[in-house]
Length: 397
Ligand code: ARG
Image (cartoon, rainbow, N blue to C red; front, side, top):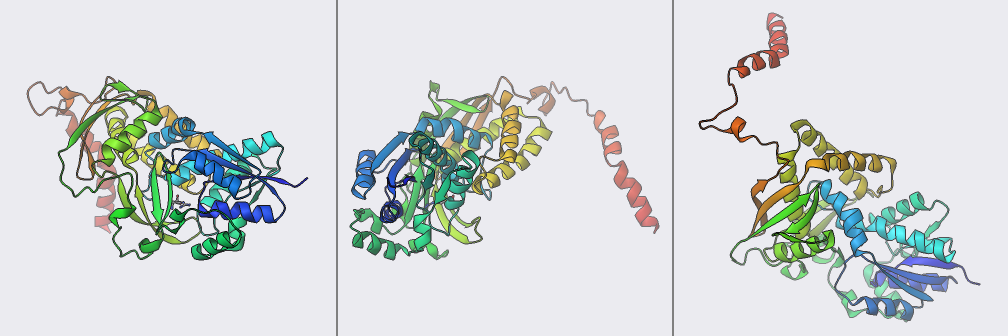
């Protein structure tokens, strides 16, 4: 009996080539498609294409709710942005796909998994590092990386091997998408001076086309968005609804030169309307409900969290410990944030919370001031005492 390999299958060119390569090497390929809300193509068509490429079995798992609950909620609570800009769209999905690869391999008694990544990106690291952490005895194969084909060569390779690839594979960009956003790269974007073509966007409308603003109120309970304009939704639905609402105003277009883990700088364009709107709202509610020191310390933790996830260390000890810290900070992050969606931006225009630390009587510049300004003199004397003492010494030298 041939060796069985479970391959993470997206339906795209590289994973089709992956099936062909593994089959040629005498493997029985089980194609596993994990639906994280990539939308676009019909999932039944993707499933069938795997079989047409020569997979012995093609499995589809709907992991959209799991992705939203287990990956997007922690990402939002971490206000996670890699290099302050990128909401980790692809980096968040890889560990979940890897988890299902490992589970499926176990169920089928397979000792090998595979992915269709090339050798130049982050995703190969994320898949293999996650599999190593979850199932250390599994072997990971990377049949496409081993070939090191250019995109054109991959198309020729697929045609020569009779693999049914989509016409869309001739699309001018490489795209990875899920419910948290879209990542677009290559083609005309490889020159960082080239402006992104309007055609490459799918989740957002052109923010320069004039439209009336929309106001939207997002309700959070302990750091989880639970309602939009008073209507309760699951995390998945919140994200889907906001992709539509904020996407209509062109919110969440991100054009960056990014540092990949493998040392390459790459120009990437993202669109993540819900992610950008939700992070703006969540961060604002934290400003209202977290103590100054917790908020300030959390910003450092968030940056480390985003780096770990970007670098493929979702299932690592440090990441779990940072998760615990972040989860603990969310206890009082409950309340409403109003956003104005307009011209490519999601701007906070109001916030309120039963857990608020904002004290009107302390903050007011009007009558009713409860802050005794005479406290400030002694405070500043002590606060500046070390500077005063050292300045005296320095001036005397
Ligand atoms: N640069 C982004 C990241 O590393 C996006 C990667 C997109 N992946 C892809 N196969 N097109 O997370």
